[in-house]
Amino acid sequence: MTGPGYWVHLHLEGERLGGGFLLTRRFVLTAAHCLPGLAVDDRVGIECADGQRAQGFVRQQDKEADLALVEVTARHRVTLPMPRADVARTGERWHGPYRPADDDARLSGVITADGRHRCTGGASIEALQLTTDQHLGDYSGYSGGPVEGVPDDPGAAPAVLGILMEQTPDRADGSRAANVLVAATLGEAMRRFDHLDVGHLIDVLRPPSLQERPAPPARFSGTEALLRQLDDWGERQVIDPAQVARLKLMAVERLIDRETGGGEGTA
Image (cartoon, rainbow, N blue to C red; front, side, top):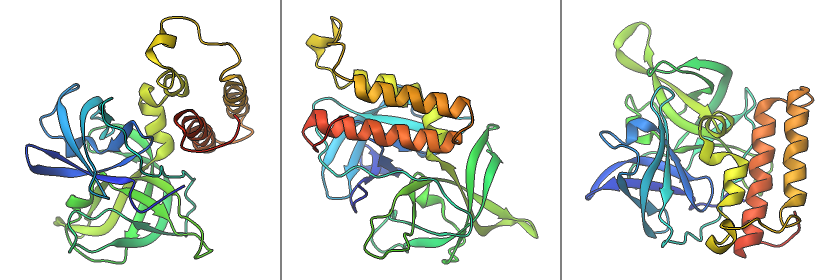
């Protein structure tokens, strides 16, 4: 369930680096350019929206796609609600809950297109094109923040659609930037990082003592069967890859909540 506090500030030695957001209670997704000069295993501070502070380290980077994954250290337990994922639809409205500072504007606008995008780093990614209601000129401080869909029902919780990454230049004047932003989809991020692979996320739930010997065969059987079925449907094009990624993330979130005592239900 999406809540107001799943986004984070990333910082290093007191200097704010940029935004990010919790995909699970262990992993933060951000834009790679928000971690300048940092390499895999380098430490980074995490400040949650509710004031909680934790230590993390750079787990994986894909600089060509401008995406990075930060892992929360094991001694810190994040208790914030995790976001719900969804697939974006052209023409729908979006907003961004993350702001670089409290006096900065809250971003909102319309999803104008979805499809392939060539990143400045060279990778071709699945992305969203977003117009903004706020003509700020420079949106760089918002990089790494989540893009949420605006539900039709005012009482419904919004869902995360992607991660803000780039700003499109003004074609009439290359020295200026347009009020058009680019966001990578969550499906793209899931495909980029093996630490978001479902098998890995299930493994991190097992206590260390269980990792050294085979886990009880029925423990995750229901969830694993569902994940295999989703993969099969994706390969047969019954549902598209973005939907497969979204549904797999939802299934693993439910399993994580059950194993960590954050929710009830069966896999």
